[in-house]
Length: 115
Length: 112
Image (cartoon, rainbow over all chains, first blue to last red; front, side):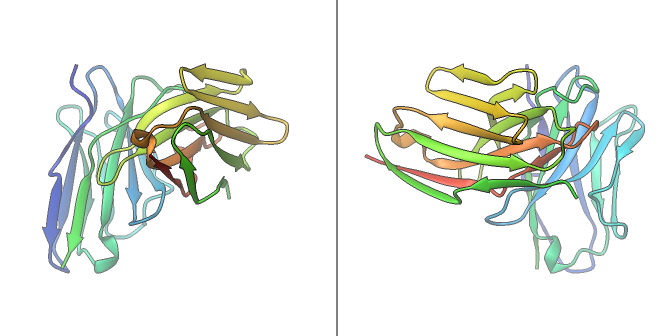
């Protein structure tokens, strides 16, 4: 049973470019969470999605960041006009149902570097 | 806003000793408390979790205790081994949502 799959593992962008990060949840999971981790820090919640719905985006910056989880295909976290401060590891987690005490399993993350 | 405090930030123990990491949370609606282990450059791995209707849970050398009244929970690792060396994160659910609020992590070093 494949785990949460994220790609790419590493992504390098120049300032002003766009970054697209993809996350395929575990089989049977319909809830996806995105977290950001700065070096030497804990994970910070960004956005919580269900298929075709954004449930909670309170942790995501209002500008330049967007997320989607279409009916078919992976969840996408999109960062437009990237800046140096966007450099971080972005992790995706999934859970099977909308029950608050369900374990979240993380993917290997995408390490985004902005030149 | 909701917050999770974690202590200590670094912890060094001798192999075979016990390690204890403590967390406090602010959201009284939190009802699920997982612990994650993260090795350098890798993903967080769930090692144990506890729900609010339980006071203690044990899995081999790892145990977690929860005091809902005081809003704190702790991770206990007994008979530590060098491979236990990693950063450990506590987390709590944010109210009625499933997203997690993480502590800042504890870097555990187990010396052979």
